[in-house]
Length: 583
Ligand SMILES: Cc1cc2nc3c(=O)[nH]c(=O)nc-3n(C[C@H](O)[C@H](O)[C@H](O)COP(=O)(O)OP(=O)(O)OC[C@H]3O[C@@H](n4cnc5c(N)ncnc54)[C@H](O)[C@@H]3O)c2cc1C
Image (cartoon, rainbow, N blue to C red; front, side, top):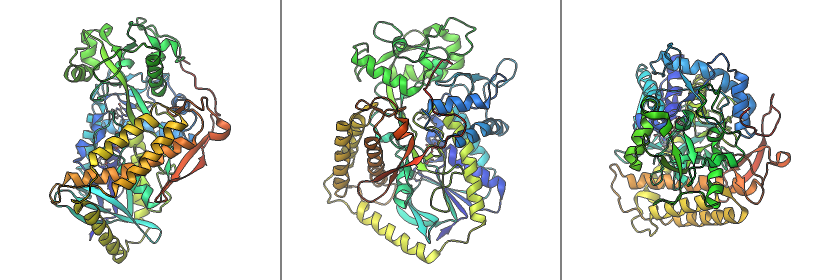
């Protein structure tokens, strides 16, 4: 049996940061990084805008905490936010030392840009390809450590728990089709978000929330899943993201009449984009993402949006910035708009509409990234520690995966050093069971009748209509019923390809199996939260209800309809208040 001290599922930003932390602590600890794609293809590479961390003299930890907590509509755990904010600059400077080419001001200082919901400029960036540079830096640094062993293109299928502690995983080697157990004393889940639950998303096709399903089935609750973030500016058709940096640099959103419609939707005071001395471009277009996406729907209902071949859009106008600034600060925006929308934003406005972007909830962990199962940790977008609450602020996530990836690495190393080795004979029996399950349930399904892509499309359609930007009881119930039906139908899937080499039909089916579980947990959390907060807007329960719902939803696996209960939100210094922008 394959054996390591620590196993990390995921080779994105969080997984690699955790691996490096372990490499630094003890070169004797053997670390496995299991990733279903080559690490540089992880979604972190797609991040454009930047990473938040206090660096300017006129900024403070207090400000960053306040923006994050109020932006998250008082749902973030405040102890976790404080830890995150304090560690953020340290991590970003560390990345610089490892070679990340942060963009600079003309005096040589690190440049920062404004970002939605942040009341001051604190978003570090590397042009508008921040995630690319960040992931490259981490990947190259990870190569320095001989004790980091990679399992590229291996698909984790199950978390192995024995004697009440996590002792490894089973994984499918995609190249050979072989399912094997990999034993470890600690496991860290760093598998990213679940944007592919929805039909129109910025998330790459690998973002299917596998780690959430793995943890859920192993007995870890999923927290705050009903909070899914829609980003206001996706390109119609593809869902490709036009980064918030376009608005951070001064881009404006206009309706069919060229009117800045956001001023009608209580997002703060209008911003004078021609005022070069404006201290922070903080309101309207730089309001938080949930409110901007909701404003689009309301504007659409009012008849203000523009019909197009892929549904209604509004216009993101950056023409006034001029070609020089666009090329210098946001060249990728120009490239994407030209290639994927067929318009050059130097001369024409960009058509945009809201698009599913980020999974705020996830695997329940404590402030040290530990789950309820000893030896099992989670960090990055798949985890809910929680700093994002009901609405994540853009540019907090790249920093989150650094700060909590490192903490997870340290915690897992510590756990591995203080615990006995795995119980091999028990793991062998679990390995056999899993091999059989995958053989019978996936490779030998030629005679089934249900088509995988058909089931997935139905799931996505119902997620969009029932638990989209606005929700109500009737719609959510329909989605819950549909998901129960889809789960039953999944048992009868048809897999035409029964070969073992690079069988992507099987991996896609494994992804869908997990997505149906996660979708069901999300929808039931949404059904039970009878209030409107952040990205969870109920048209039948408008308004925030702190008396009854200032608490985290916790979905527990039962094999059938998930059981939902609640856990207190940790409030330290910032008592719940109204969300106000343009402070
Ligand atoms: C287009 C886009 C732009 C963004 N821009 C920004 C930004 O400017 N600033 C910001 O802060 N945030 C941004 N975000 C969010 C941020 O990029 C992500 O939250 C973050 O990168 C997630 O990192 P991660 O390490 O948690 O997961 P990922 O980078 O998604 O990596 C997940 C890893 O898990 C592996 N994996 C998954 N399932 C399995 C399995 N079953 N078996 C084995 N391996 C598995 C994958 O192979 C992959 O290596 C953006 C997101 C998108 C989609």
